[in-house]
Length: 397
Image 1 (cartoon, helix red, strand yellow):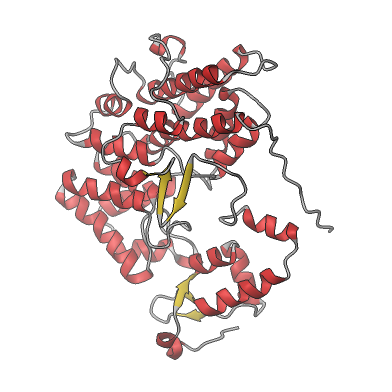
Image 2: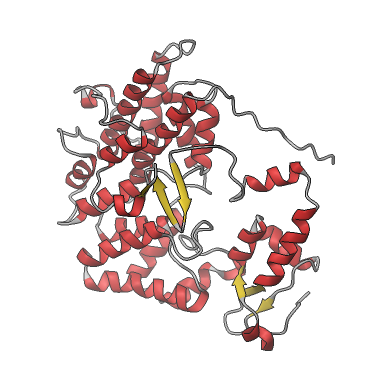
């Protein structure tokens, strides 16, 4: 049911499908179900073919619906970009920006290294010495990519610990530091040689001049992002007092899903843009059928993901002019035609393409960076006596 004609459009504050779904705390599929059942009206833009919704109508429907919600329904909604479910001092997303232990992460990323960010998030003055063995116990590269090798290393070290003995905080910190170091070594497929992680990556990947600083900033910006699925999964595991290796592996497993740290679609999008594909055609194809354009419109940043803005601004200073112009052309088309703003995974993919990094650099950068946040959450969870044990709301067939 269409609740408004297109001629009324200019008099009604309109929002897109992603924003309407976010306000209602539902998926796009459920939103379209609401429309088909006449619960929410929509307007079809005759130029773009996109669905648009009255913000006032969506907000009023949400208020009416939520008045009658049971505690179980409210809890269910809170698990999808909804109400906070855990107390934490690690990261907050407020005022349109991420904050690491009270510090603006965007400002921090202008100068900090990943190691300094780890010390901040782990609440220590400096990281414990993880030893000088470097690659001694790292699985050989062979035909395995980064993720399987890192998972293998985590499993190997998890088996070496007595699962029945709880670690004290100093031991927890030491193992967290070992995990970070090992992840970096596997990511660069070389010893760190005493260099900061971002410099080791730039050296190993033969990155152009100026790239090391962008890699450094990307690592810092992705160190944590509150209770995303991988961090929440990790905290559940850590609440059982499983080892940091087991907890980190849980985070890796969650991040391996196609709905979390999957960069394939956005790498394809940036690749097509750099090959000269028409930006309007790329965007139109990406949003066809009400789909979300890969790498755009983060629900927690309605005014734009500041992590993406910071990385893209740095890229503009060093990337080849024609290539950056094509990326900017795609961004301008997405914004002007559809109100779409880039998020962090678009910026990582653009950096990977423009800096000529390895094809899977997005995954390596994300995981090595997020090791810091995952272990910050594990350390915080270890200090809590509570077991994370949510209840299910049984729904009969």
